[in-house]
Image (cartoon, rainbow, N blue to C red; front, side, top):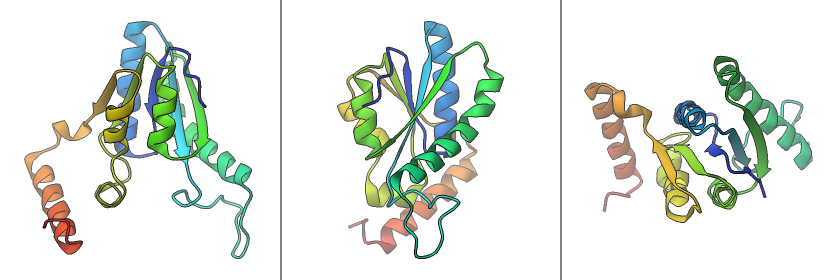
Length: 173
């Protein structure tokens, strides 16, 4: 289990929404005079293969973990550079993202996540990490919606695509 040590917990999957959540968490941590712990939970079935993986070779779990850590550090580094006054720690864990974040929330002052992760398809098919965290967390949860500032045309297009996908998958009945 990840021990956040009373700081602000952020779930980060590499998406734009996760980046917006990280930026908001930094602002909150600065105001609370605490640190941020950015968590990337991964599973072999949902994570890309490590860079050194070859056809027919299944890398050991520690290679997947190293790849997840490398990707998380790459995503977090620009935020660390932009906000050197706020300590930002990272952690990777193998497991269900929502479940791991719920467990880590027990040691956090607050949890911050993006509204959605990798896209509408995964949300429709797999459920919402943000929704599960908001329902089961042991601390307050902020769900960041970076689309709140999107143009009406962008929102209309996204809604049209989601409705078409739901219809195609017969989820609209």
